[in-house]
Image 1 (tube, rainbow, N blue to C red):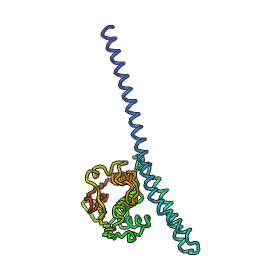
Image 2 (tube, rainbow, N blue to C red):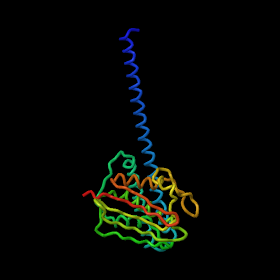
Image 3 (spheres, rainbow, N blue to C red):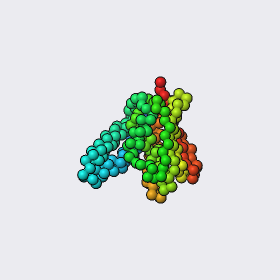
Image 4 (cartoon, one colour):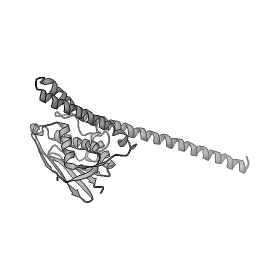
Amino acid sequence: MNTIEKRQSLHRKIELVKRKNQELSAQLEQMEQLSMVGKAWAMVAHEINNLLTPLTSYAQMALQDSEDTELIQKALKKAVRLGSQAAEILQQVPVLAGQKEMAKIRYSIRQLFEDAFSTMARDFRKDGIRVIKEIPEELSAPLDPIGMRQVLINLILNAREAMLGKGGRLEIRANPHGKGIQISISDTGCGIPPEQLPHIFEPFFTTKDGKHGRRKGNGVGLAFCKRVLENHGGTIEVQSVCGRGTVFTLWLPDGS
């Protein structure tokens, strides 16, 4: 084989390797996209489950007292609203998977928390938990109310579970901060072990083992929160001390 033939043969081999690399890169990209979609579905399933509990409670309330028409109407209206919210969350899948841009509107931060507490339908006083809210009425930000409402529900439910059995204090504060809004959600619960803190926002990592009457976690709730905040151009951070409590700090850009 002369020099020209050797060069041609080498050139063909290089082109073959390039095509193979391109095919592998395309397959890897497709697998990454499928992985994102799978994680998005897992996150959405978790959020729908958060809505199913109060929805079931309202339906049972309507069935238990067939003579109280006013109560039945109230319970059914709330059940219908929760069903609609579950349908809205399903539309978050392409957003969470990075396939669709998130739609934002300027929304009241105080109203956002009212939406979250109304959706949960829990009386925290029955658990011995005192709720303190300090949110200026005029405070608002451009955001996706559906996604952010679920973020707050996750964090509030986590705080409640951390205080179950002994009660405590749930403090919610929101204030302007820099070119955005800072929100803090703190509890006086059991806290998170320091070795677990670096991992709590990772998909499928959970600190909930199902003991002491608490739900067993699947590790997607906080990953969902992080994804939603990142889609807003914001951040979420955590500080915790075992036996003393946990503080989640959210930052949302104002966008104006």
